[in-house]
Image 1 (cartoon, helix red, strand yellow):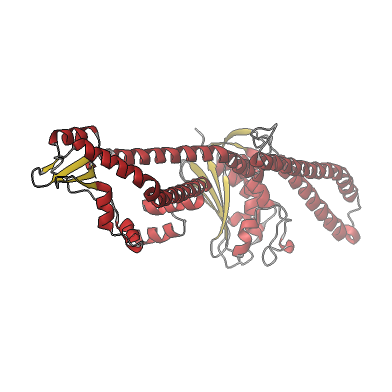
Image 2 (cartoon, one colour):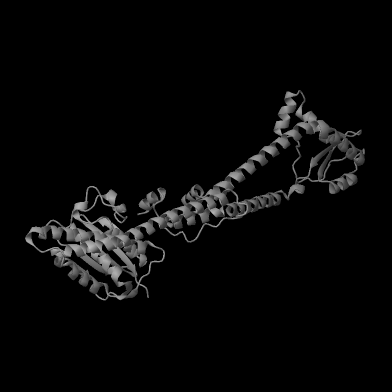
Length: 468
């Protein structure tokens, strides 16, 4: 199981809580533009700082021997003269207390060290020694000329740097690291503030994709927007255009549907007035079927546009789904001979739901009618209707035992006017609005609609939340 979780974590399909912390961190860096920008800025800052400090150090190291060395030699001469000859340990001790230096006196009369517990100082690094060697000067001679003086009575006075005076270096390093971390945090906060409009743009694009155009994407500094503000304004304009086109399409469909009802009603009335003679009875029945199909199509169009609108009105009332399902099965018996064979499996004790009875009747009728149309094999089991309680919701599942649907068509079956080419042709009935209406009805009630191949047959599940 751990191996499976690790493999799923690698391709990003598992829960992040099952992933190790380093994989979560790598994924956060890979998918977070803010973190990557801060890392780029910090890498650039460190690179510039290292380059600058290295250049300054190189310049100082090159120029120090030319500029600072004479000053240092003159200062050491003055300190040696102050100590005197023969050397005075009292004056040497006073200098060691006053300055961050160490003193060591070696000679025939005086052997004294200001800091005997510290090793002898060596101010010349290996790099300086190599440079002095290539320049033809001995490193030891350079060190003696800089830091050592020989008095007239033969005593050697050696100066060095007091290492104890640098005991604050660790604290300075930790302080520098703290400041660097603080600057990193401030940079992240600032970058997050700069890129916050991206979150608004993402949520706005999701709303527009779901058909919700009521709330526009906020534009920061609308009077003088930056690049992200201009992007948000452009997407808002695009959303307004899409909304207008959808409203125009909806208005056109509604107008056409209303206008077609009157001539259809007159055509149906004229058809019913035809004489019921043997010569015209067949044509009369065929015309009545066609007119009924056209009337049903117009009704479905009107209903779909009402449900797809932002102000879809539902007339809710307590509905017992099991009782409503039995009523719909009886109703379908007048049109389908096999409707009586539908098997209803309803769990006992299902609570009534606050639903729109007419819309739920439409959903059940469409699902059961669809399953009956595609249960053509007389040897196959009849369609099944399951009602069960699943995780604070009632699941309504309709399954047939027909040929099913190719997998590539499943995501599109609930779209308006969609019919697969290799299954469920126009000759099997319907124009592609049945499942679309079922999806709209389920969404209007706060539910979901899902489809899968049951092998054999197609299974359509609708989940409706149980509201206390």
